[in-house]
Image 1: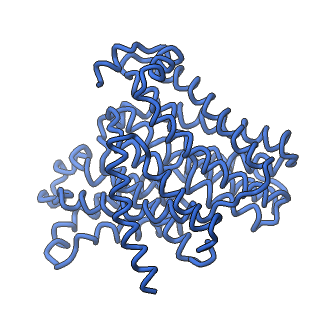
Image 2 (image 1 turned 135 degrees about the horizontal axis):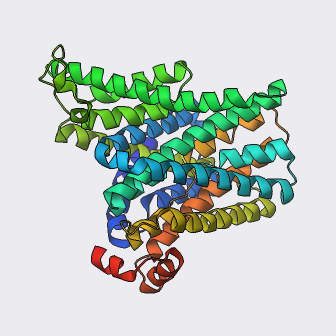
Image 3 (image 1 turned 30 degrees about the vertical axis):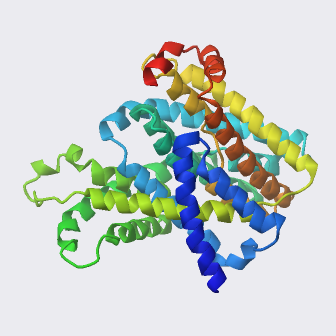
Length: 414
């Protein structure tokens, strides 16, 4: 027990060191944390996912909720409105094309039948909020592309979750109605967002009174968990509700609440201490989540590893071409467009969803799980390598040519 506690303490200090190195060297801390997990898990066998029991998956879910909420508090509603069109186009196009690429490789290279191959594609169609949001913050992107990437990661998570459960319904019940599928996606987004906004307004009305009690700095996070749980129980997306709640708490002036005479005009917003606390919570949860993810990776045969590498390379090439088309506006700098093209890592949602086909008895479920875990590792590694390489002038020149952007904008950003 004493050794475990010692390791936990050392891990926090190690993660702080990695964060500092990220700012200096562009080596993402999440990659090193995953490698630590791989070393103490699959390589040395010191620990396994089973050692964590239900706590492992619980930490993963809590990490996702807190990261999305904290990401929402950093978004500006004015910029959000200007970014919705770009976000929707990037999220939908990248999700559909990624799912198609992955499903094709699953069908033709891995020998999966149509349904399992499609399940694999939809599982990997998202980008990881747990990777993208901390990296966007550390890389200090411009506000508009940063907002696009945060929202894209949240939206594609929902698309993957709804899509996987719809396909599992086909597996268990023999069919699904397209109209109901589209309706469930829209309901998951719209109603969850509405719950988050209304929940945020309600919390603002009582936050001033809550502060009168001692030790209440964590009360907002407790409220986030409550709202997430209730939203999920209603059948909507708790992740989107958490994101919308964060946006509401820092943009409440835009909702015109001061015009409503019956509402208390002395609303108490989040202060700097609150935001610093949420940032520290994200840091701690991110540290243990990515170590746990590294421990959970299954290293299978070389065919699965080769398929994972092929999937990642094709998806990133597709995203690069897609970014050139979507970010052609001169308001996006070369660096903004280049970093956006790199941000297609897979993570929490994919890892969790990958375990479901095996539980539902889908043929090829084990292949889906193992390939997904490998893609998570390879995609985060490639994102890390691209971010590290970008300051090189030859790399910048390559992106300038491919994205049809001027190197002058990169000089101006620098």
